[in-house]
Amino acid sequence: MASPCGFQVTGTVPTGLERCAAEECSEILGRSVTAQRGSITCTLESAEELAKFDQLRSVDNYRAVVGSLSNFCKGESTVLERLKTLPFDGLLDWTAALSLWQFHRDNLDHVDTSGCRSDQAGVNGSKELSGDKDESTSNGAGSDRQREIAPSHNQAVEGVEDTVERAASAGQGKRLYSSLLQNEGITFRVTCTRGGRKHGFSSPEAARSFGAGLADFFDWKVQLKNPDIEVLLAISGDEAKVGVALNRESKFKRNIAHFGPTTLRATIGYGMLRCAEIQPGDVVLDPLCGGGSISIEGSLAWPETHHIAGDIHHLAVQRAAANIESLLQEMNHGKEINHVKVDVCQWDVCQLPLRTSTVDVVVTDLPFGKKSGSRLANWSLYPKALGELARVCRPQTGRAVLLTHDNKAFSRALQRNGFWKRVKTLWLNVGGLQTALYILNRSSMLFH
Image (cartoon, rainbow, N blue to C red; front, side):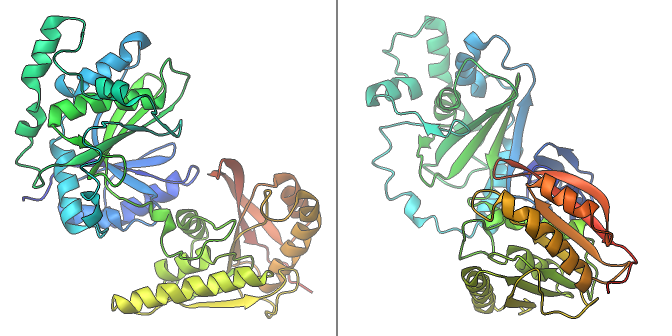
């Protein structure tokens, strides 16, 4: 199959780190990038560029863009019916997205899909489509599902002419795009997310309606678990966007095999490291490492740096060491170069066993929330930690990037500390919490 050419790809990124993701994408692809809240979009022109996009460390998930429809949700009483007929209206061009999906499946998708067909026979008769955001899958009666998803010609449908027209057009998409798809018996599901304002329909209802039209248009079979294609329907206010998911598993889970109660996403860790402006030869410290996400990500993205990770809890230290060991085994199995330069220690962040002025950069996720520490303890911990980090960090050239949800305690500690200067603050969405990412520079004041 010829390489896809001229298609749009959208990648979801941690909210608040869109600029970091856009900069990384521009550096790797050399193309202009559009950043929106929680996502970036760029236009690729070759399959090779898709392989580069797949390597972006700041992207959680990515999808091929099928189309965007403004003012689609005005007149909500007819939205669900219009979603059913949308595939037949000629408003969506699936050529680029399906070409991209086929290329990704053939060249970049390393997930074993041998089990996807095993339970197909059990789902052919129950055409049910999932809805996201509301996080609920429609659970109506089986007969109702059948009527909603695949209406028969004997069903009482308003307007005989519309029924005849849709019947004549059934399988139209399969005929139009057969040259792009090398697989027979393709299974799919629709995932819908909504935002912007309250709508008169739910996400599962929108997913079912749109999926009904797709099932007729492409003659695809519905399969909720491990489908071949996941079609994404994103509704924001009156705008509707359609895309095809490319990656099967979120990329923020990479490099971590042993998860703890507060394991940081790899994509957030990478964004924090980019904000620290890591340079070759830097010694990077994560004194509250947890599972080691930041140090592992930094060692892989900046192999010419050395990382030191530590935590006071012995289970966290064990998890970090286990994650590094699992990564090394995976890399050795793939015959990749072993360059994970991370040392793991158990220590107290208020009494680090490091010499004064020996660390170039500090990047860490401070304790906050119900699963780690307490607000009362943070009023005592944050001032001591900032002072100790100032001691081990190099004056004038040292940097720190610190993430916390407890802004009051941190702001008070920072005001009373003369060793750090605030450069800027970014606001991130971490697990539904609005957290602050503080970017600091070490002052020239010597620590005595």
